[in-house]
Image (tube, rainbow, N blue to C red):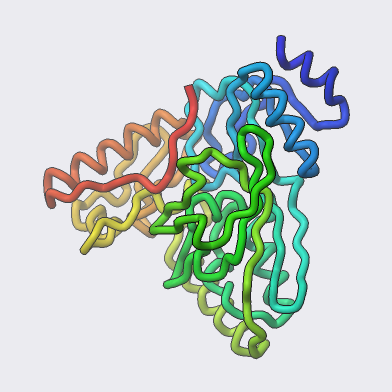
Length: 298
């Protein structure tokens, strides 16, 4: 069994056999990982990538698992959670953050140092790695607006640095969605601001998010990408789907763009509800809703 071999070869790396992923995902759904691994350093991550390549073992990398739905059948091979790689540091107007750092922590760090340009991300759930991977954004800001460079490890274990241009950022897209590289860290270029204006903007965006989004329930955040010329939430609302429920998952009554786990919902519930919403919106308005959330698993 590769699990035993891995733990014997790398006893210093935190690893759990058959770790339940629903204990870590934002939706509180998902089956078990054959081996759930928590690297603390870039070197440990390199060891994991080398091992999976040598043994031809499936590898899945999750940041804080905020914008993914892990299937109930779980994940084969090694699943990497980067939450322990979470260093944040500053050099003038540049901020460096490792892939496992939570965006909310990066935002608070930047706010504390009176830098501006990152306020848009103050309430985005999840980690740096996932935000880079998805070019996460909110309130007219995106990661591509502030990223200078991204450090990655390729699946062959090679360390690379990509510039902003190299990353080929687009709406909810980056180059690494094609390459499969693992984000190690990012560097941001920000600007010195006025503390009172930064604080005011963050308070305003936080209040807006709390008033409009169903933060009291587990969810995967915004489920669908914005269809050209429309807003997904408005289409779902107009289709009278708010409150529609399959199993333990329902279309949020507070914000139609969200699906919340209200009663021990499963990934299968999410999958069925997403398909129902897509079919209904297509039938009523002839608009295809494309998912922003990713399904992963067997």
